[in-house]
Image (spheres, rainbow, N blue to C red):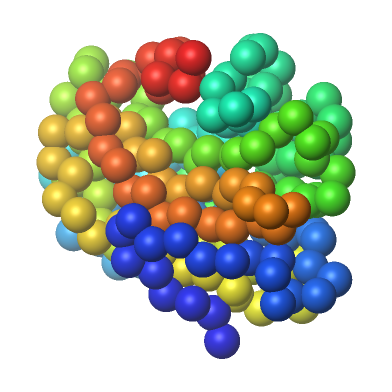
Length: 205
């Protein structure tokens, strides 16, 4: 059974999980006032929001950090760059509708293939053209990030993002990071007013 985390908590991922290597990360959400139709993660996707009458297009990305910093553009994995140069991080691509049960988008990570210079992977989601569309994460409910074993499908970690994110346009959802040759997961859940992916990346430079 997976571990449910609260904001700010950290947990061992690989310690005690012998042989764990290939994992998947999925995120889920609902527009306010709608039934659950799926999840969110990893790319550009959209759902109908009954309040705004417009699609909410979300860009989800993985930032590959060296000493907690993004040192190259190629270290940002998103809908426009689906695979890291090392091949360890693979983005499943755009989901433009958000339809279907479960995770809308999934990012697959082969932990043993992440080069040693990368100490952390940060998972970030921002709303496309949030200012122009007058949209924010207060229009989203039931958001979560989860980690599961690619071999078995067993969920290892789940973090439900339950804070009030009204008027915020970016969520730094969680981080995978190395610690004493093991991998851990941190439940971050920080909202910001960044409106573009580049703005988020600058936070890590």
